[in-house]
Length: 468
Length: 95
Image (cartoon, rainbow over all chains, first blue to last red; front, side, top):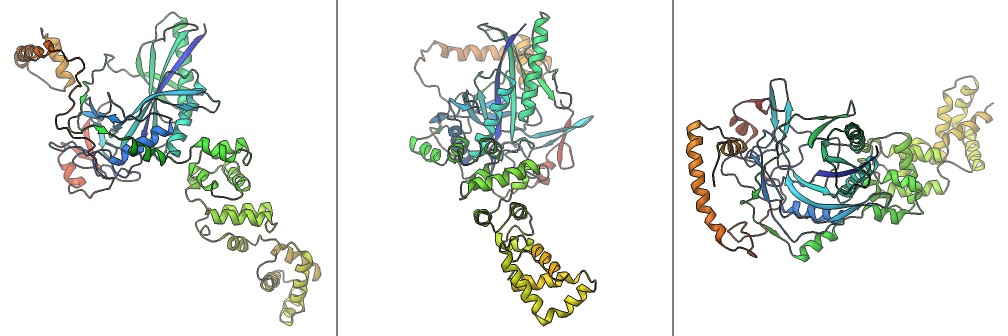
């Protein structure tokens, strides 16, 4: 039997504010010791009160705008109660009744629009590490600001689920509200999947797969759930409403044997945080700070950069920002694309991008024929070499000896000049007598006379001919 | 409103309380009294009345996004826990 899948996705995005949502503690715990970014507020010691981070509100406005969402002038915080060692307070501060971000949509590459139901601000939980007889708790992540983005059930295939997550990731990265590091959990996806018979009016019972942290795992988990649930329904069995875990190694979801009673979080208004009432001016001012989005770059570069190249490069927001400053974006984008594709460099490779000046100069030198395409590529790669990256393009090109002395006649004159110089007489005789390495000295003289402009390999070739 | 024993156990569970049988019995009576007292409010017509979320009439209280040096050190805070290991808080196994 053929079933029609319906998929809803909740996505948690860690905001990259300097401090946490409710305490003045470093929010960037990357590479830091456990429990080193923690305050008495995070420990929920008696009498400790949350102090809201105003920047998180601004980030939320930008994030909302990046998803074409309404921003709600009035929003509030609520307590969601649960007991688990990852949350010392015994509740999570979230926005259950009045979220800051209202309805909007995300557009997929094929033009489909996936509606956003709402998105809200909340604090993250701590991190647990499980051992055989105990667990360890690290509170560094407690109350890192999150926005939770809730989609409408507009997704109906594994591929669209993948594309939606990726489009969301891009939107959040370009909005500059998150570091967007999926490997380290900066964005996490909860995916619920249900099947209904073709043409049925009501949705089937859904199962939720929690805590997916890559687009690929979202896609595979949805594929798996569609197969699993189809099999159950074909056999006349029921799908149980439950939370399932994803195993990336086996490619399967498994039921988590938690008590399946309806959860009762006893939501209540957070009494320690007064409501947020934003005026339109404040919202507009923040909205204006939204940087260029992927669709803006597409408009800008259509016709200049090939569509498939652009699609690859759009995964690197800082790179797109850089390309927007470059004169010859077409040529420069190809260097980046070839490095990223052919050399399989990781995103970290692009952490320190070359300056616009370096890239413009490289494009110009290539355009003028001062560099061959191979030479240009060599120089380009040196932009990422920490030892050379700070130097200007010409210096690097000279150092590599890749500047072409295109006028061979000119080069020959220089060679003749060097050979006529009595100071090189001994070297010439030594070379003729079989001392190979002396050629280096002679090439050096040519380079010196040409003030570094000569192409050393051409110079050597001419020297060898003349000294035969 | 009749409060059943299971209701109390459920609420205790949600609040992570452990209670003796004696407490459970007396709490049932107390809760019934409290609820019947509060339920007098149900007689009021509150249609169109804005719910009260807070009573201080404050709004938009937020701080700048600046890191402040904390007086309490990691060691101070870990010392408050029952048990710690490798600078983490040690808790009974959960999953």
